[in-house]
Figure 1 (cartoon, rainbow, N blue to C red):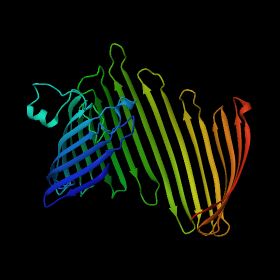
Figure 2 (figure 1 turned 60 degrees about the horizontal axis):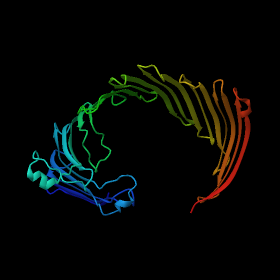
Figure 3 (figure 1 turned 90 degrees about the vertical axis):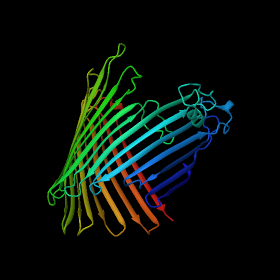
Figure 4 (figure 1 turned 120 degrees about the vertical axis):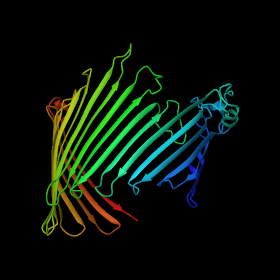
Length: 413
């Protein structure tokens, strides 16, 4: 959108308008588009309010030569009417919100007018529907609670979008779906422990225009524990499922996946050194009622970095193992060990070794050295040396050794 966005709030009243240029014409593919949106009501947007909203978007059918169109594009027109409201209660701890919009999209402005006795005459005169016009609506109700005393946060919402609802001002809105969301989080012991639960249910084909209906559910359980002088702990578990009803020509389908991760670590700061250590365990599994392409991945990774404060020395290392039972996949192992030292001010050096191997397949080992020196705040000299050793257990002809030497000078102005 290129134009202006103006909001005016005299007293309890609310006025807003924005527009005007939305799309530039692209010869052969895209018509130029204008867009204008406005809102009027009482109350500020982030407080208790009641607003009426309108959005109008229209293409200029003369902005490109229709004889050169290659993608079957047609000039469109879209108008959306709606209202949104919010009510804040209990000293702004509880908020209840509601939104409803109706949309008319004309897919081709050059189509003949719609002739129907079921549509009132004033509606025809105002909207000017064509035989290519479609009408639908969406609505959403939600509520959230944020306790100022015990820190509880809770949110719940229900959203329904019709299959024909289109807003050119928000083209990414998912159509033909009903969605329920719920989330609650609670801190304990002065926020040293934080627990949260999230649930989501999506179901499409609400108008029953398609032969099948898909349903997806998502859960999330998360807990964070962080006490001073003790290792922190993060536990995250996310089971999800997707299902599709069967028909006479296609069988029912259901897939379940589970994601679990456990992260723990500790950060130490003393007068002699600064140390950071992390351990991460994660697993992912996917199973379906057909049993096809079922697989699971499990990984374990650890890292440690220590910097000495009295000498310019840094040491770091990491290692990981991944177990993969997917088709044509292998278990793998990796590690990296490095050290850095500043001989003099502005001269940074590091040396290290790394290894990555796939079980019964291949392995790659590397030795590396990096050095950089800042001559000034504008000039830097760097040198890199790396030696690679690649070995294969299946096809030995792919084995090779590689030596890479790089040197360069960078300058900034």
